[in-house]
Image (cartoon, rainbow, N blue to C red; front, top):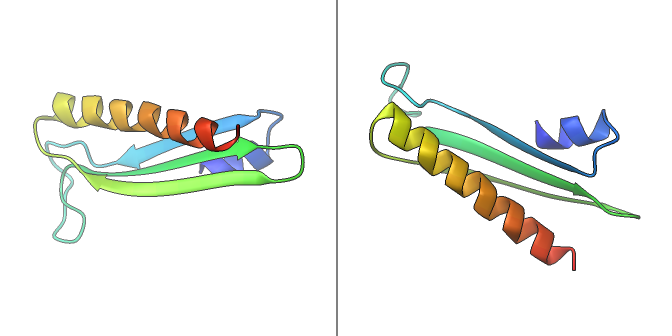
Length: 83
């Protein structure tokens, strides 16, 4: 999703987050708390792209907070690789 957003826009950076925060909707292979992330950074001659999946525990609010924190950490990480 992040790469697609970057390709179809004039943005230099994109972040995508999707998952199952709960309380329902989980499955055996994708339980509640499963969250996928994507980060894409446009460079002059290339695109840096990273993705990750995490399984968080807790209430819906706690899963969302953990996802927000992870998305921000990922932004820091990919930006540090561009320097």
